[in-house]
Image (cartoon, rainbow, N blue to C red; front, side, top):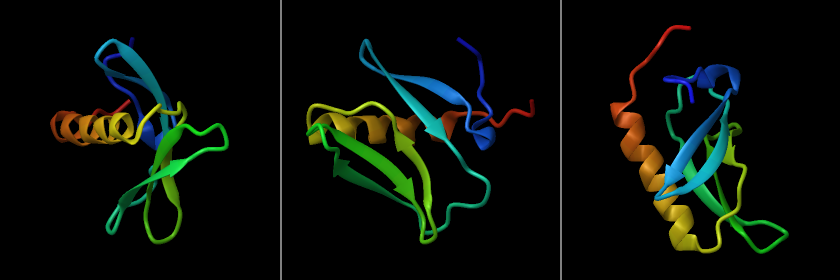
Length: 90
C-alpha cells in the first residue's frame, strides 16, 4: 500500500474499519465550502455515502454498507483521518 494518494486525480485509496477494507475514489478539484455527506440506499439495499457540494458530487463510496451505522462509522473515520493526513506533492 502506498504512503500517500493524490486524490485530486481520482486515485483509489484503501480505507479500513476494523479489518474490513473499503475502497473509495475521490475527485476534488476545487474547495469544498458548503460540502455535506449524504447517505443513500442503492438498488441492492446497501447503504452508501457521497460527499457533495452545491454543484456536484465530490466523491462516492464504491462499496455498500449493511447498515446506516456502518456507513456513519466510515464517514466518521474519513473525517478523523483527513484532519491528520499530510498534504503531499507527487
